[in-house]
Length: 321
Image (cartoon, rainbow, N blue to C red):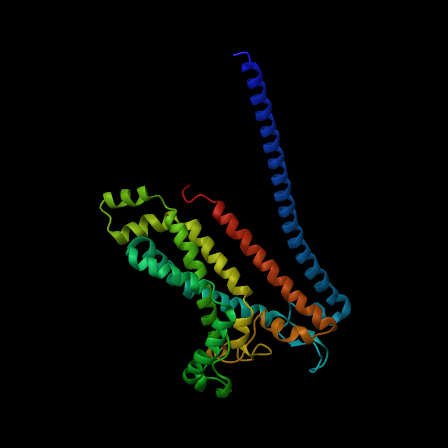
């Protein structure tokens, strides 16, 4: 019994040592995480600063570049007279293909997500989820290549008679929109499934107990409760669609915006968007033309950043007022 105070003192000292060690580990981990977070922020800011700085140089390199948002004529070499850096055609191409892809993909994705969360048998879900994950990770160049060799000829056969040059029909906004649909479907489906599964099961039971059918329960209870998550899924899909480059470039094959913009043929002939000229021409561009591609890249960064901010804002909103 005489050793009891000594043992207690030793245990207390050992406990204090472990406490100090734990605190040191916690501080070290906190410092490492803080450095990692600061490094990520610095990289993002650095990307914006580098691309923005190179983009601004275009205005000092060529005074004709000031019309970049007021014309659709892209002629940096001045083959038609004074150099022109009109980007409205590129912006219009990205907006049209992105909106078409989202309009078609959204109901398909929501329907698939509802089926997998509310109606799908367990064995079928176990089969579909791995396939969906594989589809999500499929390289974009593979999708673009398959569209180039399989889809473009079909569109050419169907839409060739209404285009000015039937031999070049099949390329353009229609093919690019289909490629984007295939690319954003897995993204919207995956996020929509998570949003629907986040809805409390009690809400389903309450709706069914009031006499709702399965469809009425999904339409009047599940979908409204998951509105913020579903909207976030659509916005993230739009962000991916507008920034996609390689797969879309394979099926656009245009140099500038066609003249017959107000006719249906505009969708079935070679056309442009914001990413295609960067992929094809940036490596050989010099001077103001090179800086003009930086402006296109900077505009894409800004648009993607706004999409992310919008998705974060929607995700923070409550469904019910």
